Amino acid sequence: MQLTIDLTGREVLVTGADHAARQAVRRYEAAGAIVFRLSTPQGAGMDGPLPERPFLVAAVDDGQPGWDALLGRCHATGIPVAAEPAAGPVGHVTLVGGGPGTTELLTIAAVAALRDADAVFYDRLAPYQDLPSLTSAELVDVGKKPGHHKVSQADIEKLMVESALAGNNVVRLKGGDPYVFGRGGEEVASCVAAGVPVRVISGVTSAISVPAAAGIPVTHREVSHMFTVVSGHAPLTENELTHLSGLGGTIVVLMGIGTLHHLAAGLRRAGMRADMPMAVVERGYRPGQRTTIAELGTITSAAAGCSNPAVLVIGDVVRVAEANRGCAEATAELDRLAASLMEA
Image (cartoon, rainbow, N blue to C red; front, side, top):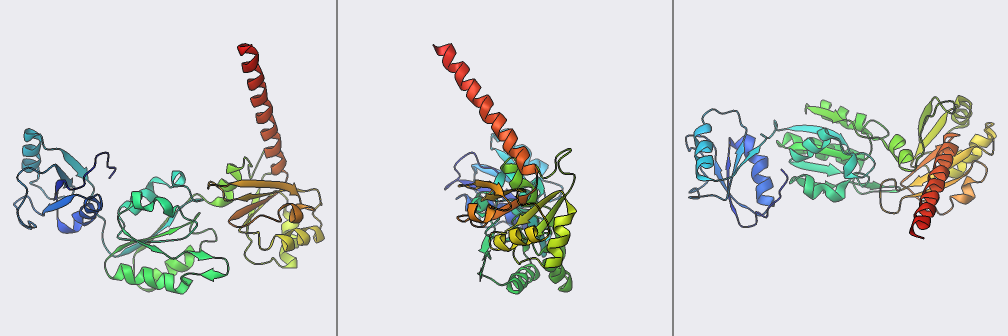
């Protein structure tokens, strides 16, 4: 529901079966409305006396026949009617990929799941700042920072399962995609073991979107026809470094600031050339987004002031971004010059 009017103190009649209407009721109450309930077209389930002329009727599509007469009277007397979707079945978990942290990159399915949630357990890398405008559910911060876990992974899974078994629609909102270093597989397994229905809504992974935010394509014709995504949380083994260096293409490392020195030195030992272009993109799509570009041999000193969340990109595609940026800056300078000549 997108509100374009102030409902504070306004009388709103929500029609529809209790189960189907529960989330619509909560949304209108969160918007400050005085909510009245009508559960059946015959008048059963009234929550106290109904207003003589409500400001708005919110008609929940609960599948019951018989609402047409009431809605027809509303239209005839000029009472606005807002169509509301029915709440989904209770007692399930939805893992939602929140993308790189901006609401603009949430999928339509993600927005719908948040709208229908009773409880949302969210991470610090998810677009949590805008959650109050996307859902009226209970919001629980279970975010984890490097070296400090506000809630352990085992406790997160326990909280999700307990909430679903209590009859709630639970959304586990994660940054990026749940199945790309998001421990989504573990959370699905916990739900299945507890007999809780669970589904996964894919998100826009930061492995692709954050480089794109810096103008870096992870593949480019005649430059790179493959890319490899690596977790930067733990140092790679010598065997892994050797294989990674020999693959070619583009290497994308997520959350790799803490292991940057080990990675750069290890790839050099494995034979990667020292002048291989490398970029560090910090805080993609967030305030203060910054890109640091250097070469494999100098990136450690160049990125000394960088911090997570960050995505590392190693490969010749970084040069493509630099060339494109140079062309764009040159074009902009020509435009400014042309404008100044016209003014003269």
